[in-house]
Image (cartoon, rainbow, N blue to C red):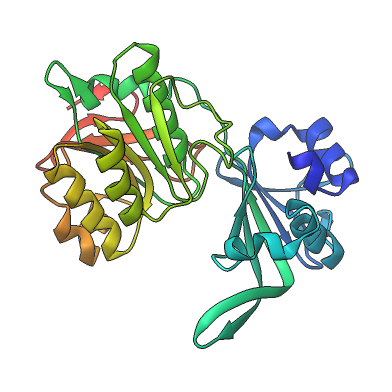
Length: 306
């Protein structure tokens, strides 16, 4: 899909000189060098590949920024306006395009975004088996745990949950898994990413609606969702657990201590059996530690038991 939205010359350089399998983010800012995130490191490039300094990096033009959005919309901005109002677009392969520009409001509500000045393309990667080192901590003879995955943005939370549910189904553990894919990033915009054999997917629904509808209609054993945020998200988690449904969710935080400081944490602090912290500043999907229900560390990254 990236070949359809990127400038042809940029695509050629990235595919032939660098390789998309190494790139986590591509950030285009009008009249500034294009920035790559490669395994947690900032990189710049020219027509020959990586360069050492910001000043030598290939620059993005305003047209380049605008063309990415126009091509992603198949040249119909109106058709993607509801997504634009949220500040991002999602492509079929799960790539997420964050958008900056001028926000137009009407009656204190966002009407649209115009005058695009920068975009950030987040590229999902399948990292097979990244959940294996702690698999036995997340499911045991008593069944699935309620699991919360913790890390800053871009460190592989979605990658991790995708691999975990894939591992469940590969082992023919016959759980009915319901994915509430609010942004289309877990399974892809048209469910084109591999998420396992026993998954049902509700796409582009808020969590409150998705949880209510999904539990009533699909009788799930496990609900998987990404990026807990507002108060309604935490209410939806409470509702599901009280219905006897297990939860696998993610949240933005640097650490267990930062998680505890979130004002909404009081709503879920007794719900999760396992807290999985991903390591920041390295390639996505690397496990730093696992904590139990009481927030005692039971596993340290690298395979060390506590």
